[in-house]
Image (cartoon, rainbow, N blue to C red; front, side, top):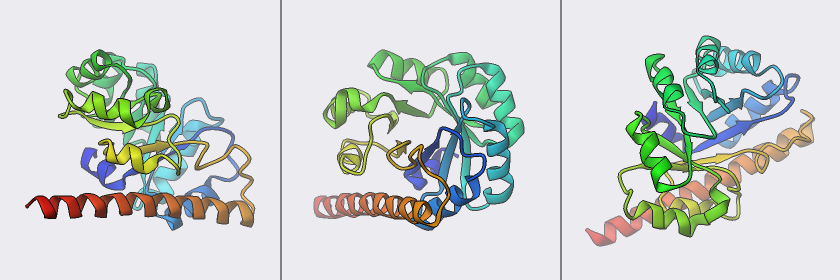
Length: 220
């Protein structure tokens, strides 16, 4: 799952009231090339949304649960079909519970101590949160001594700075309202706009990946 999430490169964050529009959201994201999604546990009908996505889109989409802050949330998310969990903080018990369930934990951390605490508790991916607080330069400085940690910047990542966060070493990106606005109503126009944002984001990701490949080829 770690490698699958890294390969997906983007995790779309579903936070809000999308009970009536989840199918349109999933279709638009997939059409735009985004294949990983987390439904936050503080969304209306979160467990039902996770179950729907896992059952109907699980073969083409990585489905996880977000804002997982209690061990009980881990069990609930697992039973609903989540394959990974994302947290805003680092809570070793939640990390261990996810690993025990066979799910990939992605705890949130910001400082070097928090990041190392998450890693020592068993996390193989760490959400740098809130990423906007330090920006890409902070992340680049963090990765200098912590180059062995795979970071997923989340919180303030946008189409405008996505490339910079990837160049700074992000293995994937977490995006919420910038990608999926709370005003999404499932209309044809809303679906088309979401698809276009997802497509533009993935184009940025692919462009940075090609850039990195060129640099590696020149160094060889």
